[in-house]
Image (cartoon, rainbow, N blue to C red; front, side, top):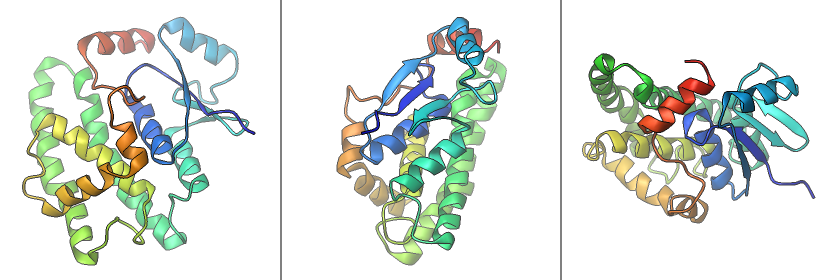
Length: 222
């Protein structure tokens, strides 16, 4: 029997958080080995564990996988969260790319200089409410199904819930104009594996605080 996947990253969200979400949604237990210093990162590099000298890195099924998108695609495919055919996979990819763009904006906000934060915070709210969330609201309304693609639970649903919760951390009432997304949030949050991941004490990480930002900047020479 294969061991648990082992995740190598900092003790924060970053690009690993969506991987944590997807593994948890699939009901897969995983271990984490945190990169806490510049020396930890250098050791991974010197050991040849990082194909492109970068984390996230996930040890899974005998591989040392890098590149967030490749890792997520592998997990989704392995655990039947990637659609029934090529068309559904294409839809999932498109929806995931949209939520990835939004979450990327939110993820990098704490690392920006103070003079840029206010402007970029306003841009996040504007993009979420006029570019991204209206798309998913329309999809759910038009097909009247429980999930985004193929009427079955997929990576796209996991990713959208993660994005919704991140956006609500920025603006708690951000879903007010989107009744379909409000209902979607309730449904997906109550899927047993996700409900467990959302409980206190899980491997879900908190938003980056000043201490974590300083640590990440030191590790990666930002």
